Amino acid sequence: MEFAISPEDQKKLLNYARLTIHASLKGEKEIDPPHLSTSLKCGAFVTLKKNGSLRGCIGRIQGDANLPSTIKQMALAAAFEDPRFPPLHEEELPLIEIEITLLSPLYPISPEEIVIGKHGLLIYANGRSGILLPQVPIEFGWDKETFLEQLCWKAGLPSNIWKSPLARLYGFEGFVFSESELKEASSSDTCP
Image (cartoon, rainbow, N blue to C red; front, side, top):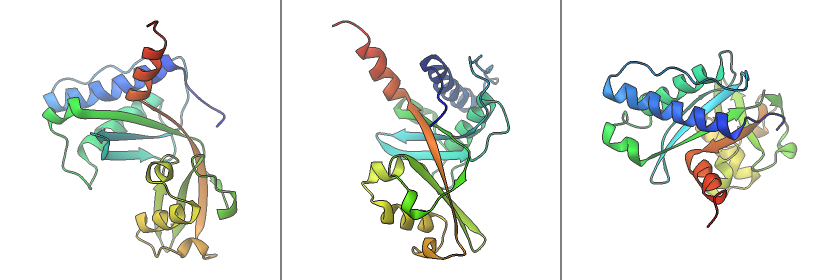
């Protein structure tokens, strides 16, 4: 992927996501956005995991707002609006790990071009769409065909529709960072 953001900015965005959720849970005033060293605008997803399991994940494919604004909106949506889960409760927040995925622009991709762990996918067919992030097939141990079938399933489509000439398949790359990765990186920087 051609873009990345500094570890300092990663830390700021993860902290901003956590503080934004915390303030909403407490009914406190909004947190001021962090000042970043980048003016990057891109699509982004915020994923919440509780004890290693998915607890919420919402994102935007394209970024038309500044990055802190996008992260704030997606963090709140992942915590309180993911239809697969009840809204997050205050006592859960300490158990939540936050992960952010920044997305490259979409581009048409053929099934033969897909590289597991590199590409996320978006499919459009029969008026429906579905998206899976690049890290998902790795987390579940999927091969390329399973990745495509699961993408179709997520869109509410037949699992083999990706083979149809009427289906449009798009790829994107993701720059992923999480609270646990940054903790590991900072602890490995210290002397024993």
